Length: 112
Image (tube, rainbow, N blue to C red; front, side, top):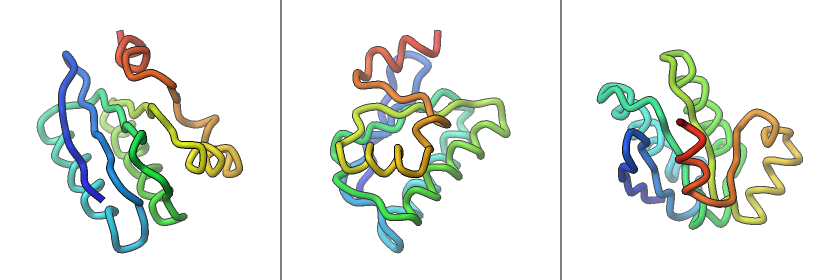
């Protein structure tokens, strides 16, 4: 998995690309979130547009990102869930934990 970081005003957006699986992508996501916290970037959007699949370990890392940011007064929101990932989020009921958006601009506006 690859992560491309960009900014939209005060909001940090991580464009996630590829599968998020045990041993592939977990460390990158953790390091990216921790680096954002160190840089005082507390408004984070995870863009799942190019994530075809994530396993339970990947899902756990997304939850860890959410709780880590929440502990320091931050927020993680999710945008552009692919159908498979959206189904997984619904089955695990995590869709009720995260604020999710179909459109990135709506997600950015929701921080204001």
